[in-house]
Structures are given as structure tokens and as C-alpha cells.
Amino acid sequence: QVQLVESGGGLVQPGGSLRLSCVASGSIFSINTMGWYRQAPGKQRKLVATISSGGRTNYSDSVKGRFTISIDDAKNTVDLQMNSLKREDMAVYYCTANAVIRSGVINTYWGQGTQVTVSS
Image (tube, rainbow, N blue to C red; front, side):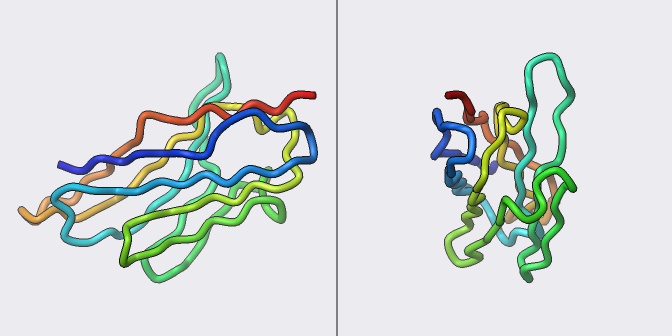
């Protein structure tokens, strides 16, 4: 099994910054990609950004130029630096990892989520 633990959420004013972190642990053989999704109240969960173990990134149009995703393959961690936050960024942010576990199975895992509130 693989566990993902997020940290770094909280309350920030519009225009401010937050950094989310996520660490994956458990029976991990290798990680293919890690990323962040978000879900606002009453809305579907949506992609924010993903990054491959080789560093290839993918961002939703709504966060391009404001958010930066990074990965530390050795530590199985992924960070999301969020700048110039807007009220519409307010959501629960979920970490995800597509990993190969030691039995050879490939699966996608999710964290419990961390709340990001953007308010003055």
C-alpha cells in the first residue's frame, strides 16, 4: 500500500502565496507521476498540475504562470508553490501519485486533502 500525506494548506489573502507539500510512503518501488487536483464545494475534482519522475510538467490553464510543481524523486515528495492566489483557487487540494508498488502492480493513490482558503 501507498500513503500520501499533504501539508501546507491554510488561509491566505488574495494575491498571497502558499506552498503545499505531499510525501508518499509505503511499498513503493517507483513513482511514475505525482500531482495535485482540487475540488471546490459543489464542483468536480479537477486537475491542477502533474509532474513525471523525469520532471515533465502539465498545468491547468487556470494556474499556468502562477503555480509551480516540483518533485523530489529520492524523497517521493511533490510540492506545489502557489502564487498570486485568487478566490477561485479556494478548494480542497488533493495529492495524487501513480506508483509501481513492490508487487509490480501499478496504481493511482490519493491523499486525504488539504484545505486552501483564499479570503480577505
